[in-house]
Image 1 (cartoon, rainbow, N blue to C red):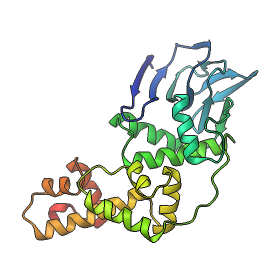
Image 2 (tube, rainbow, N blue to C red; image 1 turned 180 degrees about the horizontal axis):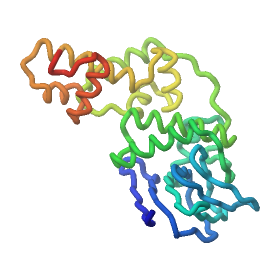
Image 3 (cartoon, rainbow, N blue to C red; image 1 turned 90 degrees about the vertical axis):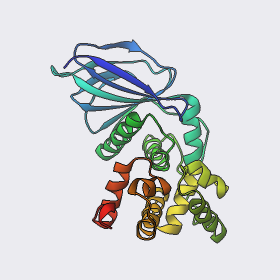
Image 4 (cartoon, helix red, strand yellow; image 1 turned 90 degrees about the horizontal axis):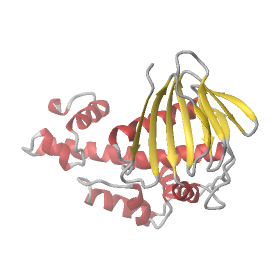
Length: 269
């Protein structure tokens, strides 16, 4: 394994940088950061020392490093290791903590190693999606970002979880439906939907799920596919035009989603 590192700034999420690296011979001397680091070792094992102790970070673990925490990092195996890192500015983490928790805007997050294979795997998948697109503003990504950061900060005892918040009111639910029908061909964001309801983003996610029984992303995806069926049945539009008309700007994504929902490609409907 040769050493290589690649960083990607997420354009619509200021303060977030994704780092993807493979290390074999390179080692981190003792150092610190000015931002928060969430680290995932997906292959191999990294040996890390911080807070007077040495830990082994491997698949199934999530490493947390706050600003100012002195630590190092070196491969613990001859084959090296693969590392994925979310680098969050204090301002970005503070805004997330404000969304998902009941407490200080900037959480007290100590250096820690969490052994949670499910959380690590879900964070790794989100990392791959964000790194591939370079974007973080889609409804699906925004929702998953808040959900996983809530899990992470709760596990690290850095926030007090929000109390159950009930359901959307009939008026709020009507506003959401009206907005989605009116903007179906456009990008619909979590910020926009939460703003319509005059709720915080995470509060909206929880109340929407309580009201509908689906996440906003899953519900909106189904709405788009159902409307696509209507257009395919009643119009002379091409499949590409139908896909764009219901908010899919990638026809292959539309084809996959349609087949998964209905068991047949759009061309066979």
